[in-house]
Image 1 (spheres, rainbow, N blue to C red):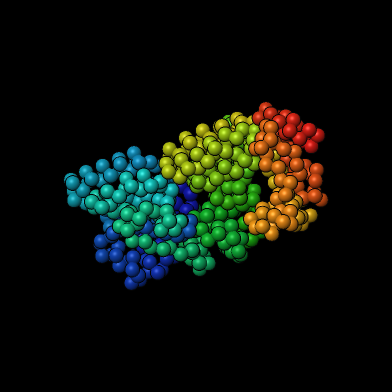
Image 2 (image 1 turned 45 degrees about the vertical axis):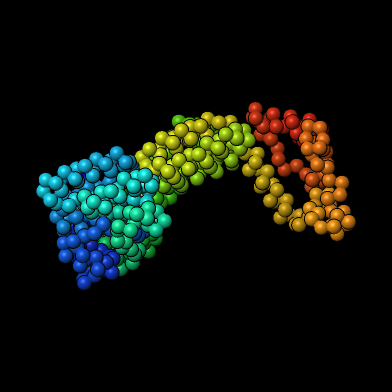
Length: 426
């Protein structure tokens, strides 16, 4: 079985009668089924959680309508790929009169410019668009495109649906039906799949292949044990998803750009949301680099904005540039440690009074009772500095920020020592 497709792919249904779940859309006399069987399909958006059958439904629709079918994934397709498909679809329509279907998986990951490139073809009737998304299309699909599509909401699979998928696989798969498989307990299968039909079949296949017995009784303990032992085979959105993110962050923190780019590529291959990656880089830029290289935060912020505009696949280049810069930068967690200490201090000491000389005095009464009195305006003194107390009296002398051991912060440290004499001597 080493070269056979995964179980989830082998069990992909080819018609609506074999399709499991979404009875409200494709069951008898349902709205979408009537549209499909009527032979006319408008451009549609299929919105629902992962693993509920969006991609499968798109394939079934195309097959039943007997239309030319094109498929793109927003993870690795750009404007050029869209234009190439539209050119092919236009030629097909001109030559044969057939209206091709273009399926775009994870359409919410397309940038505005990528979605704009689809708009003209949909408006002119050159293609019928089927978009699949796990995100609310009202926020993720541009209004002009959304207004030309009908949105159908797919529901999470019920336990009855998931049980039906398992039974179909055990009885209908050409490999599994040769074994005597009995599912004694379902809870672990359901829990690990999280209601995702594709994950469910992946987990079942892992357990069956790992045990490799003609007679097999599946229990919760067996499923948990085998999935933990074979985590590398398990779906990338499971526990391994978090392990890879952890390795990515620690590689940047450890100043290893080679490893950091490798883990970036692993996340890209796993279908990670590019904006999630960009958000992590923003956090790393402050938490692990901070004032050792203040440009890190500026670049990370620019990266986040650029990824949001550009989308896949070009955004991978921007992410790579930023990852390499952050990994290669000097490191300091001094700002991170300082706010942690400050929050701990506040929690321990409570609401300390603001010294009178630091208080605002918008009224005459406040001035009369001493608010703002004896405050020394720093810019009125040499070097824009005047030595005075800024802490509450009870916390005077507290140290929260300790500059990191890097060129930039050592320079800051020297300045603070010069200004404050012994206060920042560390």
